[in-house]
Picture 1 (tube, rainbow, N blue to C red):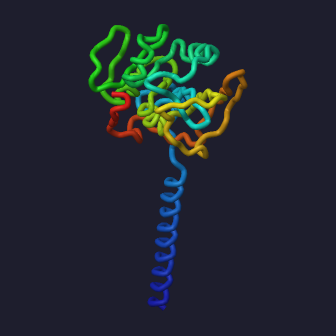
Picture 2: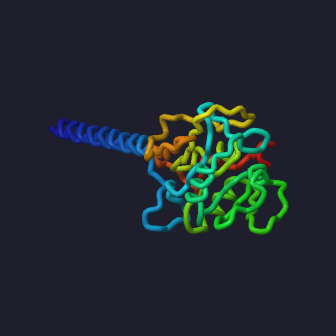
Picture 3: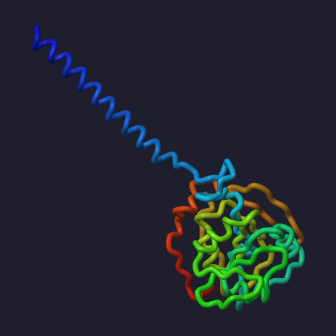
Length: 226
């Protein structure tokens, strides 16, 4: 009888232990497939930033052309006015060549230029890599706009929560294109038609973006924008 009781106890312990292992395995699996988004809710932006405030802003053709010989291949006043209205009062992150194509700091905005070689310029915050620029922008009030060129866009794609795209209706030749990206990661939030372009705001479907341990890691800039 004592041996039978021991068998019952051991059997119960095995069942409990097995269930405990299964429960822990399911919990671990659920935590892996349901990432915790790094999104500011309480206003504490020290460890992470609300990704809807980090926006890629670009004008491009259907073939993703964004530039030719360091300049825009087109001159569309309505698009320039849209750019100004959306970015006024906010921070801009750009590469050195993009800044040089503009020619001066854009007024009414915080101009942050990523470059390893650029000397200090009045009205400009120079950061040596992309992650430093993002960290610097986090200290400011308002939104952060990534405005080019190619390398800035490439590094912004994993961390931005929105894309503001002016799809130019005509075809233009160019030597610089917007980086390829997975369209399935983005959904259309709003769209408006203009005579020469269609403006579309895309929202990222996934919000698992951490700026304290960002996916960009140590930034590398190619010869494009340094």
